[in-house]
Length: 423
Image (cartoon, rainbow, N blue to C red; front, side, top):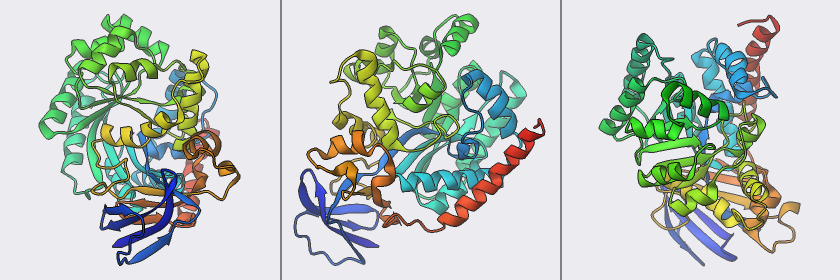
């Protein structure tokens, strides 16, 4: 399919974009290429699709299910026990709901970590988004559990998938995965040229546990295990010092900041974005799961990330809007090894049209400022294109009503079990 977008705003000027198949072919003024579909971009701005660097898509089912309690209690009482009762079909509808929310708010690619990989894959394939899907690993320091997850990972890698879907290895955290299994994940990822997606240094409790159990801070523990590498993507990294930042930079490790989840779970707020950027660490932004941030809206996450930097540093120049936008577009694409994140010929056609006929963009002195600080939610996204396919136009998404109904029905099972004092 070919698409011609006419007269959209880009870099303060009207522009046309011709898409052929899944790639941007031409960008310029007055393009006259014949196309299967022509989109009028008048009073709309064009931006690269947003990239969610860390999430757990199926956890939309847990939105509002266990709020206002500490992370460790939240996991032990409200998440892990109830995840055990989820079926493949439950996870499928949870992921479909997540994809719908991401489409409606402009996310074209997400980096996911969750169980029941076949169900996750099926949902994402149907919804048309681009994703790096983690073959998630726990072992709870038990050999038999480790072997189960290793075989699951091998089966996940063997599954057929479209070129929009990339597999990663996703060991959950250093407090749920043993050193031996972390090493296996590293070796498996290296042998199969896969990314590794891991939670690290998220809370003070994790930091203290790491010091007590392993004798090292979380980052130094991974360094001792020789697991720091350019293929490693770390979610959170709130509790790191200057030497650890240098270690991460020296090994090409990427970091994803999740401000809403960190704030809501009381994990911390002083993410060292400035120090990481100065050291050369590529930094992205994520929403985390909807159970801990309550939505998958990248513009909201971007605004909070920027404001947090200004607030805890007492510095209004920290993390300006243009850098924040770069974190959720170009940086995210580079972190996930995706040829997207910029509007230029040869890049994947992952794009959003932003409706400028809204109060958030009036007056229109500075588009990026309005997008990050004023819009602050993705409902300014009018049209979304992923891989050269229109997934939303005029805010309409195919199958939206069915997804909402089925996801709500699925989530009621959790409520019923909770009311009975189960699972």
